[in-house]
Image 1: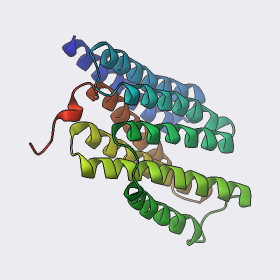
Image 2: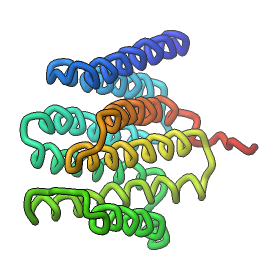
Image 3: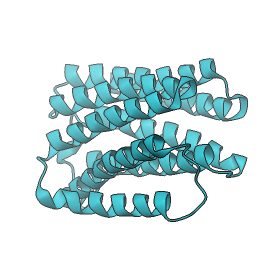
Image 4: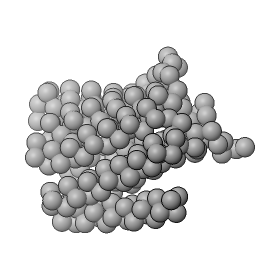
Length: 229
C-alpha cells in the first residue's frame, strides 16, 4: 500500500508540474484548471490514505485539504476576475494557517515572524513607484492579502523552529514557495515585469501545492520524527 501511494504521489506530482509548465506557456484557463485539479487529486489521495492509516493529525489533514480545494477555485477565478480570485485565495490561506495551528496552538510570539514578513510585504508594495493597482480598493485588497499570507508563513516558520520534524519542514518550504509565488504575481500583474516573472509565479505556486499535499501524507507518522535525531 505504501508503495502504491508513493507511486501515485510521483505520478500526480509530475502531472501537476507538467500542467504548470504548460499553463505558463499556453495561458489557457482549461490547462490551469487541469493543473489545479491535479493538486487537489494529490491532496485527496493523501488525505484518504492518512485517515485510513490513523493519522496523528486528523484535523490538520482535513483543514489543509479544504484549503487546497478553495485554492483550486481561487486559481481558476483569478483568470476570470482577479479581485475575486485574490479574496478566495486569502480564504484558502486562512485555512492553511488554521491547519498549522492544529499542529501547535497559536501563541503571541508566532506573530513575530509573520509581522516581519508583513512589514517586508508592505515595503515592497508601497515604497517602489512601480506598481499600478488601478485604485485604492485593489491596493487595500493586496495589503490585507499580504497580512494573511504573512501570518501563514510566520506560523510555518514558528512551528518549524519549535519542532524540526519533516512535516513542519514540508509546510515551511511550501509556505515559502507560496509567499514567493504571490510576490511574483504582484510584479507580473501590477507592473511591467518581464515575462519570466509570470512563469516563476506559476511554477513556484504549483511546487508549493505539491509540498502542501505531501504534508497531508506525512502527517500520519512523520510529525514525531525529528530531522536532527
